[in-house]
Amino acid sequence: MHEQISTPIVIYEDNQGCIELVRDSKFSYKTKHIDTKYKHIRDLVQNGDILCEYCPTEEMVADLLTKPLSAAKHEYFRSKCNVV
Image 1 (tube, rainbow, N blue to C red):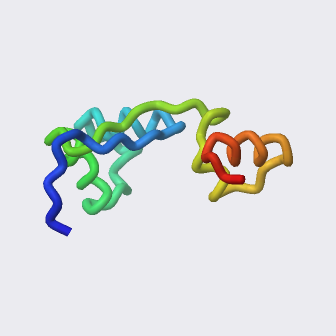
Image 2 (cartoon, one colour; image 1 turned 180 degrees about the vertical axis):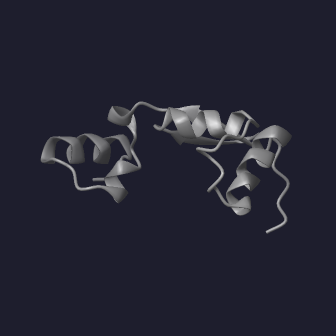
């Protein structure tokens, strides 16, 4: 799309291990299975193009579209998205 972005894109993540993996360039035997294309995210973070921030699971609005939820959670997330 070739659009210039002046501020980093924020990606909210509820997996703290994932956030550490993206922020830290250390490799171990536990992470050797991760493919190179996934390491591209690390480059984007280091370049300041994206930010990975922690969001508690209870506040992860994306779960509305990705997981089966109880009626109460569904209603809560739906209201957070301003969907009537």
